[in-house]
Image 1 (cartoon, rainbow, N blue to C red):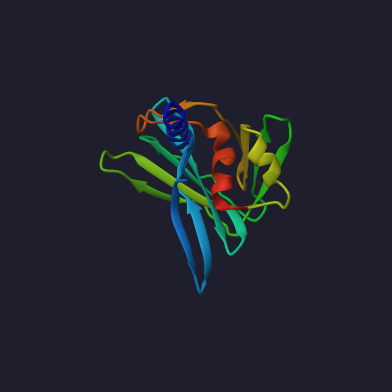
Image 2 (image 1 turned 60 degrees about the vertical axis):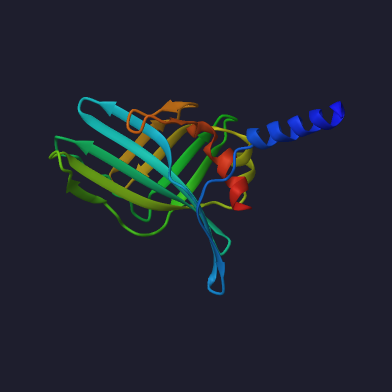
Length: 188
């Protein structure tokens, strides 16, 4: 009886310790397959009245993996437009020293600028990046330490934290291990 109770406790603890995949969509029908993760906060900076956040969402459409990147900037002042074009790249420096390059899906974008209810300027830029073949093994095994985005208008480096306590939504995130957690969910 004791052995049985210990077994049940261990199985219960294992189930609680596993982090289930949080998918935004999982479609498999006659037109194809599509699976995507929920948006995940990768970077946040609040300084001098300007707030910047970067969210990732990873998707697989009929076997083609992509990374959707959303950059949101909010300020009372004018926000400079960072544009993406066919030459734009996203570079991820991993903790093991390797650098992974993702290629922007060839579509020029400079984002949208709107005003919120408090009169702040808000600029939203979304881009889709394609993974280069044979990079998933490294992304599944090593965390991210730095992200560099080569915009059409310049290059910007973003330091990726191992733990991020968001000032925006009050939640805790672990951006350094994003790909380690989500790539197995997408069955790549």
